[in-house]
Length: 211
Image 1 (cartoon, helix red, strand yellow):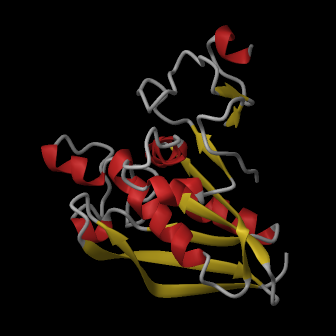
Image 2 (spheres, helix red, strand yellow):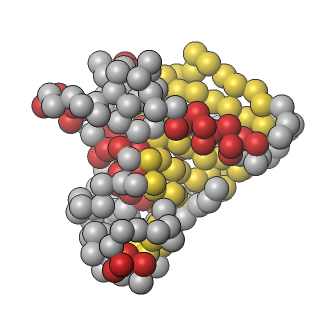
């Protein structure tokens, strides 16, 4: 889990009653070429009229199919119980990876890479802001593993106005939680050596990461 120290990254979020769930939902996203496509999504909300804060949860490499780790559902239930609306976009199923990509070595898995999935995260944000019971100014993002790396990639500030999704990011998530992401990747100005952008707030094996 990471907190923001400086402006190059856009922002930060944290984590009973009745819960309603919407299945069969699909949201509009775009391919890397800019073409429109629909992907499945799951929507859960607390009982009541709102307005509620919301969290978009990006699933891990196991996806949301039969081999799913179940982590997105567990987080969703916890957060709905705390008064959040939850949207979980399915980045894998309709792209041919219903069983996940954890052990898939095929070159085609780049079609569902964390960087590719950034578009899905912002598509889910755009969707949840249309819901009358959601406070669109209080929408966060979270994910673990593959979804954690997607979360980091989604929160890196655009370096120019011409960059893809630059406008979406400027008006984007109020914050994010990335659980065990791939911290070895370079993302914009962020580096794994913590050179002035993120500081972890959960224990890590390397003492340097506790500074």
